[in-house]
Length: 414
Image (tube, rainbow, N blue to C red; front, side, top):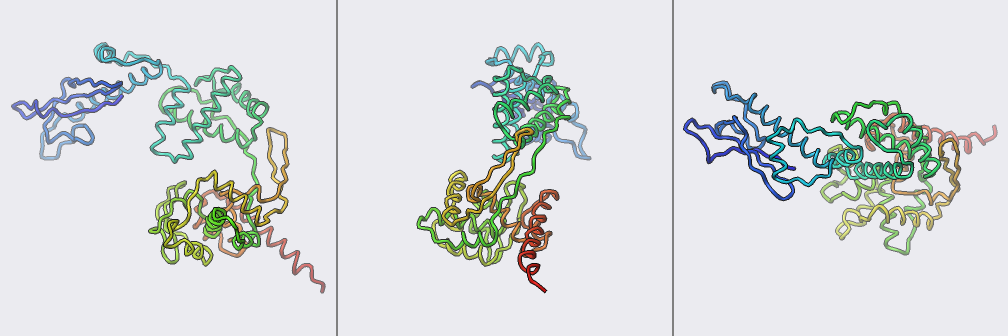
């Protein structure tokens, strides 16, 4: 339902006042209705805001406070009616809406339902959140619907309590075999939704704020400098592998995410730096210095149809970069540890199997620190905001330096 307000310039009276008309558009029809007792001059009406302007100091008082309050209440009540129609699966008609306008929308009692409200939460955020966040909201909603269908535990705003938390843990770990990090992701999204709906006054349940899902620390997978150089210098027979390798290595040399590399334009690039808006953080005019390796990759595609860099879907990118690393023999045995509840799961595979677009940025951070770049400079380039997550890279760099010292100088005999 869309509600707009317009000044009836064709109905201006002898005092220069015109009535305000409300237009309700829904389900393929429109309703035109005058806003009772509200009139103003053409100069006092704000067409963009659809409200009466504050009078200037030299003008007489125009009742803007009282009149705008009437308009605000009408709009608010019609939004309430629209929600009532949605939650009760009603098909709105002109007669129904006019009857509610006559009898009083204030009397409409809305009992918000969980999943329609979750969908409203998703739709409301589409214009302000990045696509990746919206996708995570949809994934969480689908998971919760599967949970309800499997367990027969009816999800309402009031049923989100300690019993729900115990059941969702069992369903996540025992039935779905998901890891701790997945439950932490679900609970984080659920808390965001419950806080949003609480602010909307859809419920008064705050038990969810006590939920705590452990998120196990995951390993930082990255290419060492020798591995990176081996990949960078490898001669691929396939053009697709060469292009994917170049984009991956470019991100290893400058710390960009694949989403930001895909959005690069020639206008973003100068001789010595890239200036971009980071998609995830929305940081404008972020300047990232170029080094001789990243410059060489850009030069390879200059004045080609791929300038500044080739683009590919992330799904194909992750498939092809694994193939690239396998061909370049990035096969160091690598172990990752994951937990499903209290059950530990150790997985050992050749490193190339763990390489994705995300590991390029981790490669840049780790190797920059190992090579001696100042922590503050690295963080400024990558935009890391969380101290605890960045300190993990620092620890890896320090441990690697100590290992190299032990393998070289400390092996020398006096």
